[in-house]
Length: 70
Image: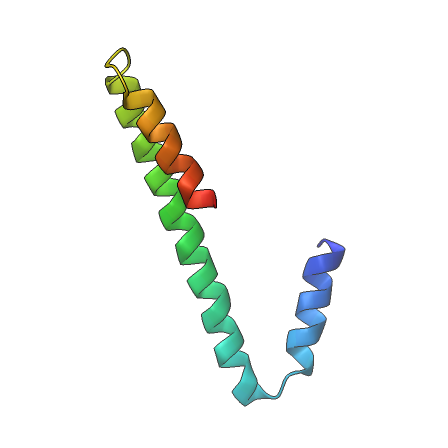
């Protein structure tokens, strides 16, 4: 286990039981967000591949991709 994971584990172990649930909810929410973002990027890449050669598509997809990071 990495040092950062060990630290998280140690900190969670120090929490009172009633405070663990909110922490778990935050972690789960973050994982769902990452998963949605990864799926959206994969879809955008498939669209980009299918639309290769169509004027303006690559630039528009790149703009949308960069906007999601900003």
